Length: 528
Image: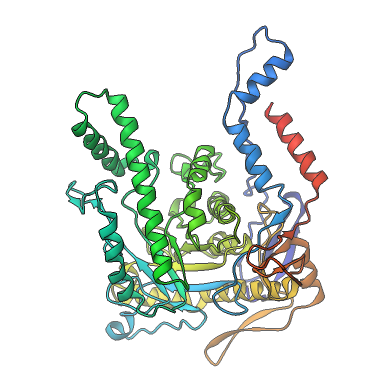
């Protein structure tokens, strides 16, 4: 981090870059035994051998599984894409990485005489009720319109189901919530709709959310008492999904109309449900399940209508300082970046929600996990990091003091490191007309300052970066990162005006067409 006797090590065996220091700060795992490689899972059907000839057997194995066509589509859209879509300009000039503090620590000052220094955050907001005119606004279930849901005791609120709720009344009521929390129509900022009671895809309403499937079936059964259960279920699913889609679509469309300069999206969208580590860490790769990737494709209507995406990478303690933890985050952000490019318009910016502590805990993230959460997100091209916390972070003097100490030292140093590196890379490679992201998403390279040429110092109580970028640093940026140009610019260095402006001709990557063809042929041969 600061570079106190720091050295830079290249681990060729795993193609990863390691930054370490004599102070014990290891930014990337250097123990080759702990770096796990994602296992390539076979997707083709394992049909039993029979008397079919070779060509028939290959055709059968290729067509019998829906996942192979999906894989080929995703490869064509992602890994072997010759283009990276341009994206919209950042909210703050020459700030490719937005840092937002969304932890309710405002009471730590008046109640416990502990003041937080938050100068390095472009956005400081609290999720608590009663705070308005913030440039990061959270719209919970009771803050925006008439969102339908069930209480824990199954008491319906506003009808409980989207197919029962009045959409027209909801849209009319939205004006009040928006006017209250974002009174200035021309305000610029982030607006996040946090509706977590039900999900728009029927199949994803498992566990406690199954109540929405249950009541949807009951609604159909009441109207059609003679129908078979199978027919009831099919119609209930159709009615629920159509109503949920329309409810969410009309909500975000109306929200954009009311406050057009805010970036609107839904919290936790997208998600890829890569929580297999809860069963076992052994063999865990963090990979998003194929079925969940396919389901995310069904939500293309949501990705294209949103003007920003807000995935979450909250890390459980079981993933503490581990390679599985890093893979958990990497794959979630990769999926967010993939879906951000849905449709024909410019790619939507991705703002990643994380926490200064482990999920459902007050234990602070280790330095390793700051890299695994914040570092991974930034290297993959996230437009911003939103540090979120609940009321427990400021509930008493001890929690306030602990969080403030962590922020002023470990957390602030890392945030300054990665945000400065992101700015320098944007300036060096993209002329401030784009942001840097990895050329190869699964490579272990990060936007970190070189500790041999940069150091972080505290001057007059404020952390600053000393030294300047040298030619070797620029070469490393160019070796591992590429530009995602902002709307209106194109080219490797985003140095050419884009005549199409808003849609733009995308920036070419280093991947050649021949490499893509060879890769696809190899994959198909492996699968078959």
